[in-house]
Image (cartoon, rainbow, N blue to C red; front, side, top):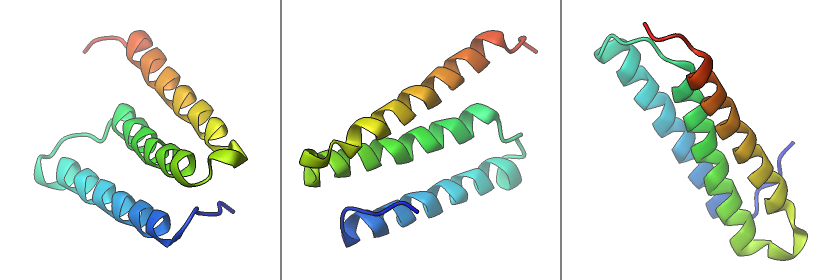
Length: 89
């Protein structure tokens, strides 16, 4: 289980997650578009970017933020590879 840095961090991540779910709802049901893989990966990269900032700002001595940076790099790598290998329709 992930341990948040402080209460602001915890509630901010909850607000970001709810905002992403709302945007996904708009994309699928209001704009009648398919929810693409890159949208989900971009949302996760956004959440991890916020997590890295909070860990770096408030727990710099723990170096836990470096692991989160690796997670973001992995998500961005997956997005780039999937965009490059997906045939154009």
